Length: 332
Image (cartoon, rainbow, N blue to C red; front, top):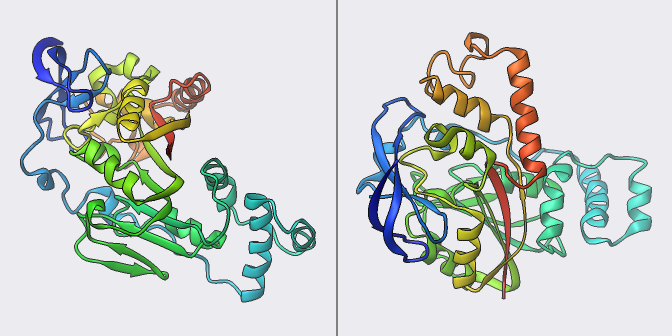
């Protein structure tokens, strides 16, 4: 760690901030990049954003190749019954009909994972308009929402090759600044940290949210046990693709500046935070032949170690110190 003078792009603090050298370790090029930690808002950010970020997103980059499962093709009757149950669970309506439906169908499995988020965002009906930003060419989130019964769904990502439509869901090749429709919920699932213009992006989101609408942001969290333990070997630094690693303080500050109130957050870190970081500490890239992500059988991790990594993540989440977090911002 050294000290260098920089201006924070989150809080505008110009100061001599601590700086760190971070290696590119997803693909293992080991090219180095300078990051600085703001003395005021505790946001860790890249000192100089590369002029051509696209070269760090090759065709093998995971979001260009991961194909989420399309919504299930089921009978109209089954969909109707499931919708009765989901509607009661999410919106508190139609208890009697939902009770009858419970004897015939189970809840869709997606309800358990994303239902609590929808409730926190005060989604009131299947007619809610929802936008997913930075979702790539296939959005697991939008597909899951459609399976639950939502239909006013849209995705946007400026880096996909062209507009796509899959399973009745449209994903546009565009920046959020070009979208003018109004939405009940805008989501960014691990895409916000890749966006250079943070304040402008939140401002654009605020402008398309309906009154009291929500923005759900899932990002790495610097205020975490894994950063404290691994430092520049933390897998979520992902230099240079992750331009900003927010602290709880910096995300609150940025949201407030753009008239968004942080009303809730929780950590959703997994064991990946720990085994991925441990690999980097051992100088093993994420895409290496011996990486646990590529060939678990060739990894040097023992069952005991993997169990410990999972335990570490759970403990960190329990005290709001996980390396990933989910933020609920409401338009005020």
